Image (cartoon, rainbow, N blue to C red):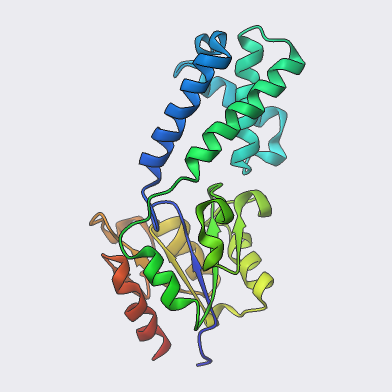
Length: 236
């Protein structure tokens, strides 16, 4: 088998805990809204947000996979619902999103994540492959990764084959020369296997394999195990 050339990484819940990050980023944004658009808090509620998201998707169906656009659009609808004029609502929405996005990219990496990437980058091309909207420059991952493919770029989300093929096309790599590393059994493991990639399942929370029809090439419970898992795939 040809030598492995490309390692693609999921980001959220593979290299960091995304739920904690989003909660903190939302809190930062709400503090900004209280100071700069207090009337918006009456419209930014758990009850109203699902309907506003549906409205945003209905108005922009081709952007449904672009999480940054969709969040900004929902914030705009929040501002309009709160009574702000259209131009002001747009400005406020953009500013509120930027506060959120700064927090969203202020990530705390899982132990061993950066050491892993540093060790791998000298031997393989490393790429991010994410349904989320984390920015590799803002997170500092551009020190290790050659590039990134997001669902916003492709117009589809993992496990759609287009996501994985985009990374292969960007790097002129064949599926059997690639390992995809991720935490989600369907989005990551099943999606990558369907296009012929090797897979490493990052199982940090003791999940079972019942969610997928595909078994990963390797399973790890700590990030420090990934390098050896890739080496075992390389030796097949």
